Structures are given as structure tokens and as C-alpha cells.
Image (cartoon, rainbow over all chains, first blue to last red; front, side, top):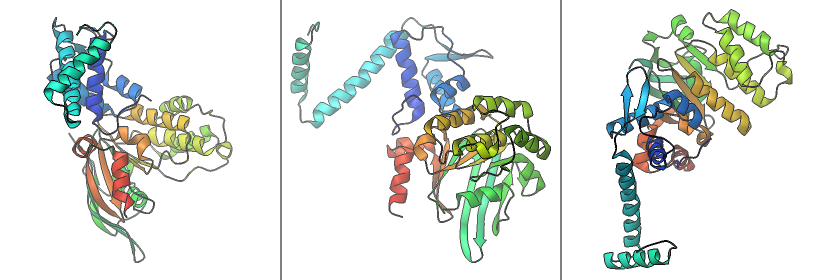
Length: 125
Length: 233
């Protein structure tokens, strides 16, 4: 069984994992998503939950349904870049929020981040 | 979406002791409902009434719009929490027995599931472990073309490998035009299967809703919610 964070909706986690697969190249634009039932069995989750995740991906313009053939990743040049910036946004939101919770000002946060990047091998801050 | 099950104020008294006080639920087709509550909360009584094995003391229920009776019995497949097979039977005898008993029994499907569960047709019921019996019962319950499947504690006393097989089988059996009710107190193992959940205590529904909505509203897993609800009771 694959692992989910039990505290957040499962469909949202399926959406995120498919987006990650697109960004990493495991899924390519034009690829067919496995059927609802196949994915439900692979993840051992309720098929309705997978269905809901697919609907969400379609609503967000990540996938499209072709009648009688299933769901496919859209073939849009900007897709991977769009998903990357969306994910980066989410990571940054969390980072900024947690730094603020520690009492860091925006300036201190920026400094801490650039110091950290300077220390990272290959970082070019 | 068609409604598979609708209950209205179901009550059941054993002598003077109330087992069900007021169960009002609705289950749409294609949904899997988790019925959760501690031992003695009324889960089994509720299922037996819906399966037509007991009469309610009050209230009504309908399966696919049919009110309680011979017709609803044909629409409901019940997996009891206790083994209902004769110990002299082999797996293949049990399948024959069910096939004789239920017109909607699909023998080919049963044999197929038997293989998936790694059970041998020649195996005797009395030589089966608890986990094997549980798997055998599930094969029988799921081989009917019913509209409503009632699984009473399908994971009780089953090892993790068998548990995973059972969970996979539940997903394989799922169709859009039937519904499944699973009673359990091993919430963690199956909560990912649930669309709807109903927590019952002392014969009453104390919380019901969409599983994903509850997760996001409360920021908790269904398992944690269960612990929170029943810790103080």
C-alpha cells in the first residue's frame, strides 16, 4: 500500500502526485492516465476518490477526457513550467509562513535564505 | 445518482434493551460507507435488519426503492461477522451451496476470486485459519450480483497480507451501480475505501458525512476522529 497523509483529503494528494509525475517526466504531455479502477486498485483507495482527483485535474486544465478513451495529460508547452511554478509557490508559502511563525521579519527571512543558498554546494545566490 | 439504501428511524429492542434507537441514513449508488463504532454499538444489528435476518422494532428502510421484504433480500448480500459455513465443507462445496441458494450467484467469479485469495477449491473449511475463513466468506458474499453488500467486520483477526487482499477485492468488486457498507473498528486499515462515514454509539448515529470533507474540515484522519469521538464515551 502506498502512503498517504491521513489528515488531508486523499483526492488532493492524488492530484499532487500526478502533478509531480508530470514535472519529473514520469508522465508526459499526451500520456494516458491509468483508468480510475486501475489507479484505485494500485493505491488501494476508493474509485470515487480517484474519479474526484481526475475531475480536479481536468478542472485545472492538466488533463482532458477523450470520449471512450480515458483521461490524457494535455499537450500544452507551458504545462510543466506552470506546474513547477505552482508547486514552488506552495513550497514558498509554507516556508514563509513557518519563518514568520518563528518571528523572522521578511528581511531576516530573505537573509537567512540567501545565506543558506550561499552555503549550498552549487547554489548561486 | 440512484439511492441504494434509505433508512428512517430504525429501531430495535432486544426484550427491553434497546440495540438501535434511531438510525436514519441514506446511501447513494457507487458509494462505500464506513459504519464505525465500538463493540455493542449496534453495527451488526443494523446490518442484520437490512439483510432481512431480523425485523426492526420500529422505523422503515428501503433498498433500491423496495421496502423490506423478499425483494430486498434478493438485493442485499451480507457477510456475517461469524463464519456461517459447515466445517465439513470444502471451498468448492461452499460455492455450490451458495450457487444453489442464490439465483444471482456467479460461480465463475467465485472461482476466480478464490484463486486471487490464494485458496484452493479442495480445502476444507475446518482446516482453514481465521484469515482464510474470512477470505472464503468474502468470496461468497461478493460473488452475488447484489446491489448492496454488507460486510460486518471483514478484517477482524486477519493478518496484514490477507487484509490487503481483502481490501483489493473490495475495490475490484466495486461498481457504480452498487454500494458497500463496511463495519469496522480497525478504521486505519480501511478508511481510504470510505466515501461516507457514519459513527454510531448506543444504537444512534452521532456523526455522519463525506469522508474527504470531514478530513479537510477537521484536519484529521477518520481514525483520529474515531479516537476523539469514542475516547470519552
